[in-house]
Length: 193
Image 1 (cartoon, one colour):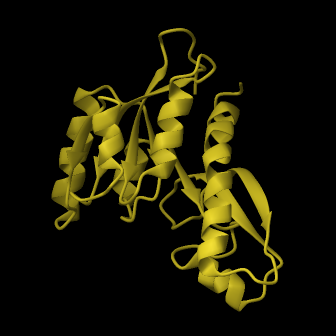
Image 2: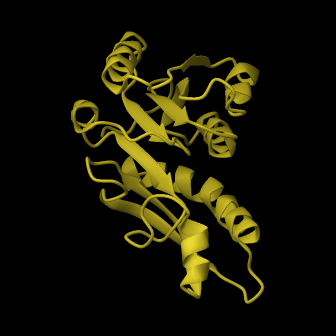
């Protein structure tokens, strides 16, 4: 990827399914001078995703696609991204798995943030599983997306210590706070900045 300077920031879409706290931190980051990206589109698979409010608040275009018919939704998605000149995708709590075909079209340009220290605990219920296995540490990972779930090349990770009294909720909160810092740092690393 070519580092962007000045006004030529890389046009980026963020895909969400939930509260959008990572979206919010990415928007804030994108509006700083050092950011190589601009957030130009928000995609959600849930019409009631709270994160859509950030798109509204920051006047960013948004679209909801239900993914009931994956092929159809992905076709529409690709045309939306093309029309809006989107060059990069950041998945931020997007709870749908993109097809290999879709990923190929954005090869090396889709990032994801995952709430565990990959390759451990791919998929869902990461905090529950980490606690059940009495892990001493968990954390978060930003990685490139490939056609295998949570298996793409790791860009950056942040370790979080699990305390003796940790609950799923407290661990989730602790890790989320780190995700907000890690995602922008990973983006800078991808652009060699």
